[in-house]
Image (tube, rainbow, N blue to C red; front, side, top):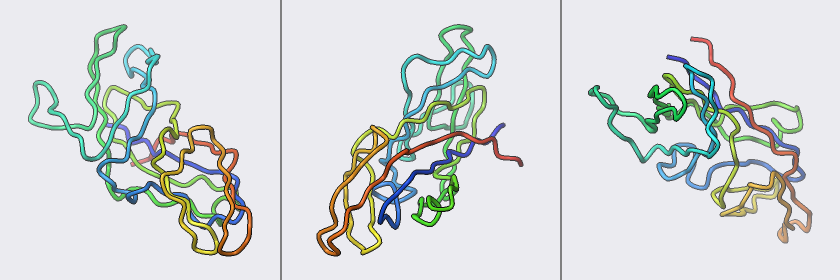
Length: 168
């Protein structure tokens, strides 16, 4: 078993937090990424997704996972199981300090998540004035709007992600 932390960071202007729409443990929040086979190293061409609210049985096992996938190259099967309550919101202070913060952790057996995608309009941005922008699409890695409450621009740019192996 290997645990990977999805780490994110960005450059922000007048942003307090960047978070999934329904919170960190939203059962419907989709995490999109490509998958690398732990056996042969083949990386999928298409993105897979996982979400807390969707579990599938693991073949020849009593367990469940959020993703069970067979490698098209070598035929080996692997699983990814999400670990709830393992992440936190990205704050403006984190961004100013250049910190990557964990958004979610994944227990991976035979698969490795790579190339995370911030796809879909499933993000919530809270400004330093407390204004909430919902259903924000961060798939381009950039977003900008205007906070009417405090008459200030607000933006997210240079959105980045990586998967770090968690030492256990």
